[in-house]
Amino acid sequence: MTVRRAQAGRIRVRAAAAAVLLAPLAACSTGSGGTGPDDGKPGERAGDGRPATVTVTPNGRSVRAGQPVTVTVSGGTIASVTVTDAKGRTLKGAVGKGGWRSERKAVPGTTYTVKAVTRTEGGTEKTTSTSFTTAPADKVNKVDWRPGEAVTVGVAQPVSLVFDNPVTDKAGVERQLKLTTSNDTEGSWGWMKDWSGRDRVDWRPKTYWEPGTEVTLRAELDGTDSGKGGGFFVRDYTTKFTVGSRQIVRVDLDTHELTLERDGRTVRTIPVSGGTPGGIKRSWGGTSVLMAKEGTINMNSETVGLADAYDKMVDYSMRLTWSGMYAHAAPWNNKYMGNANMSSGCIGMSDANAAWFYAQVRPGDPFEIKGKDTKGVPDPGNGFGEWNVSWEKWQDMSALA
Image (cartoon, rainbow, N blue to C red):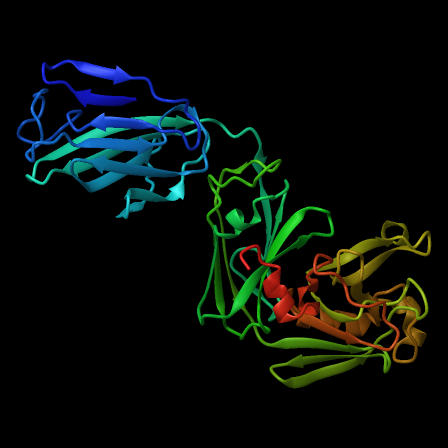
């Protein structure tokens, strides 16, 4: 509402427009809750002869969330503003051109109290207090992210966020993602479809991480609207991790060898057998990233479109793609290790070599795979396939490009 101090001590109230995101909203005179020497004397004007009027946006009940809180004043200046929710949490902000504006957005289902201290040209200070309540979210969007908190990862590990619901306002969401590194690593966000079909955004450096880099992600999403069909985010997400030693796994399917390099030196070369040439059982080429060390798992060919070729428990399983390419122990193929590619697409090795290799690698280590008969490179959303995209193209995949 708009409230003005009347000369005869009466208060005139004018109904505000509907409480929507961009509607004109509350204006309150500084006579409410004033702290100056003339406090509580309706009818008196501010020291400069003009009434100081404060306007807070948004205002009312059940207003739409997802917008900053703004405070403007006419007939004076803003000395300070405090915006507090019912749990005592505050929205920080600053005075700039046009008034005070909060850094973060109002979140759904929350009541905020706004206290503004204004100062007239004559030096008189007044405190104005008002409140508004945001409507609950009609739909909530959530995030699954990698890597986890306080882990050490390989030099190819991206930061990856997969969203439960569609993100149509990709630029608005990307602006809320704050990634910092201990050495100012150059990198970029890129949007894609995850293998699951959901929207996903990854941050990868221009080149592999430098060992020892400390990375912090602050996804300040609370109160951010995903856009049509996606709903609001109702929390922030934070993760910190460290980059370990520079380990690169080089797989040559033509010589049937896997070589582990650490900090530029060869640790060991072991014989392997890759995917069978000439059909859908070929291995992926290019760069895949070790996603997870899954240990002993059941592998069923029917889950990856290979009919009933196999259904068995497999030891030392290391996932490379969502589509089912692993490095793992394959003792049933021992006679082919180092001689021929006879797997259903995975990188197989002996039990002993798999046990040793499993203990050496960590999630985030890149597998650089080459061979004359691979089935191409995995898409960015099939595991962490973004390293198969040129840096220029990757930058173009940012919503802010």
